[in-house]
Length: 165
Image (cartoon, rainbow, N blue to C red; front, side):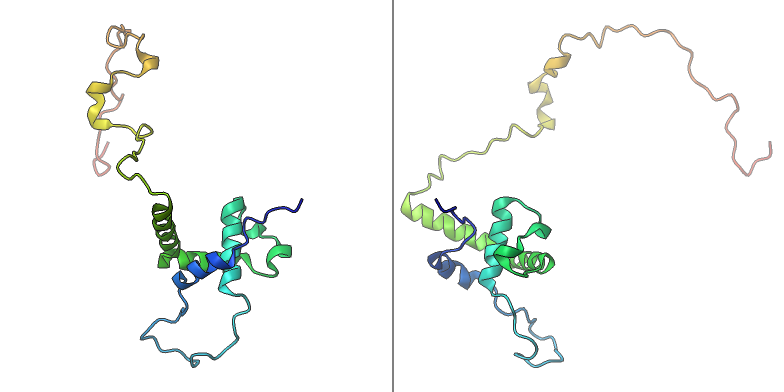
């Protein structure tokens, strides 16, 4: 049985994603030495970059571990720069929004029912309603007797450095 390539992007999905990807990296108003269209043409397509990003995010590998047999000579630093640029441009948020809207049309999202679990954060203003830590409940902190000690004082009185001894 052939393995399913979960990083491969179908033509139907690519048709939805491609309009969301920024096309021109040129900044408007900036003067460039070369004319538009000059220089070397890009070797890799946006689709290959997107498939490589999906592969990295899907498998959880580091950027440098991108397999050459799947993505050719696509460099990890160029891929990471493309990912950072697309993330800053909001490409992945737009894909997420579009996916949520499509799922909402198909199956419907019960937005009124959804809730968030906040039990993993502390509530510093509600300590009086929470009570002591369960591991400290049996301890008698207030009733503890400490041995009597004299108050600590330095053996030499404090003086400024400008003062003579």
